[in-house]
Image 1 (tube, rainbow, N blue to C red):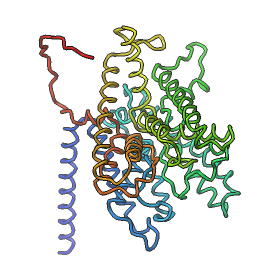
Image 2 (tube, helix red, strand yellow; image 1 turned 90 degrees about the horizontal axis):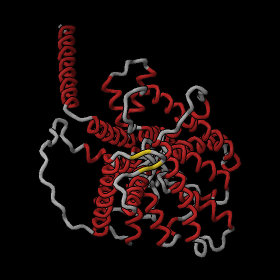
Image 3 (cartoon, rainbow, N blue to C red; image 1 turned 90 degrees about the vertical axis):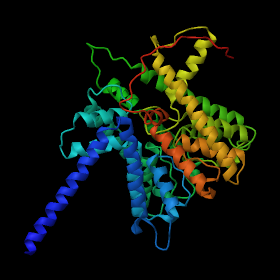
Image 4 (cartoon, rainbow, N blue to C red; image 1 turned 135 degrees about the vertical axis):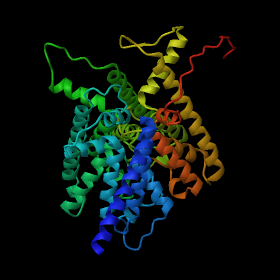
Length: 471
């Protein structure tokens, strides 16, 4: 009798689970790939919040409120780095390891890591999965998607491993034990490559403000994560897969991305150095001012770690850093913001308008008008979003305007730099910053496309044209 009841109970549970799975499949079939990706990121934030709420992740006697846990989870998934609590004091070693796992999840992308486990388990990756990978990595074609994913994962994990080894060995004299030095090396390498920037020491990288080796390695790791996966892949193929029969040619995307990223990195560092030459760096040597300026330029693109106190900088410099955070990293990378290619296309568009041209040319190629329209829409929408957030936070927070501006652009650019406002945010302020971090990581374009109906018909009716006065 008992066996029969158990059998019936198992059968009922199986049928209930099957019904739930069918309902989920029906819901997913009605969603666009973009909506599914955003839903996955929401799910990732939810799971991360639950994991960070577990008792063993927090130190004994420490209680982190739900809103602060949610804030840290959203910050970690979006690899921003802002935190309303002292992470090093609040979370245990197990909690820090979980944070590193969340950094990987947010930095590499939910779909990339889920597919990685598919590959490990030797499960077949279907057409729907490939389409989601294509969407999550900002690719245009599903051709060679799994091979590309495998290469990206090996590259990123390899770079993290080398960075962890170099930094860990270098940190040995700075920490009491070999294990602590290696742990700091691993954490900083993962944090830098994923551009997470969550500080667990309370001093970020400030103790190494005069250590140019650490700064140089950190900049390389930040660039590796923020310059874009396609750039890393094509660079690897250029160096190691040369074919004399078919000369290698970098794609237009890689050319525009690389030039824009490097120009912003160098120009940003030089501008910061010149603007602070007679202020923050007044008593510093030339090399110290230069290296710290370049590091600030690199970290403001999405990384969040710092070697100098941002609060000691002048307001004009803080506005320049805010602008760099607004641009963010490159597409198909771990960073946020409007992205480097968007900024480049907007600048090229302005130049074409000034010169009276109807088309945009760069590196011997003409850009699609659709890409130009998207870039303008992303920049405009991002500007309106950040401007509205600044106005709201100016009403809800007890802070100066520059602190609010800096916080908003840091959240949207998933950077993680702050002037000290983050721990003092109100509940409303925390929710706004969480929203900005999420949109900044997912992307403005995807956030707009998620509102589009999958089966919405395109308007084929063309109405009469009429000019209006502009300018």
